[in-house]
Length: 179
Image 1 (cartoon, one colour):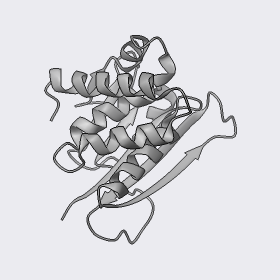
Image 2: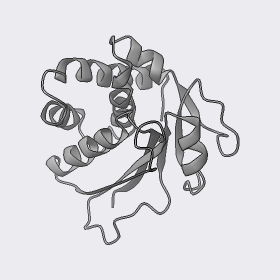
Image 3: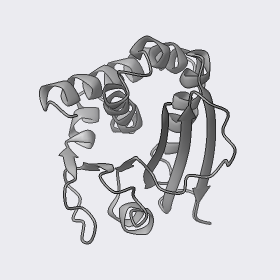
Image 4: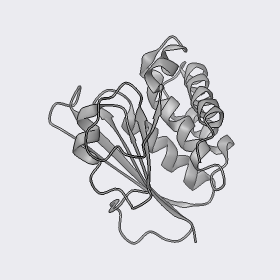
């Protein structure tokens, strides 16, 4: 049986929700069951936001993530707000520039924002995260499904730069031998 609970977090406006929608869409296209939920503060831009996805090869009976297997954070505020219920031995992926107290022991830090800047658009940080997730889920979810979902879901005219950021994230994970 395959089941993964995933939480992406960041600041409003960083595209966390879009990344989660793309992940869920790719999973469904690959034949999995998927549920995607989201939450953000009243200050939609700049406040902490999270999006969660449950992927499974069986029907999903409860739509909320209870204990994430994988937690990704792009902002310190979101990290502090959403890190506390991670599954034992869960994977934590953090933007390397974050100052994070608490539960960041064992976290893997990535230069997500700096990598996104290489595309010329820091706003593609969500796609860098999606590339990292693709690597983490490579034994279950084909990378090509995520690439197809990116092509279908990103705003018109932005597929090329978003796919570039996605592939940068995937390569970054591979280089660091993330398991």
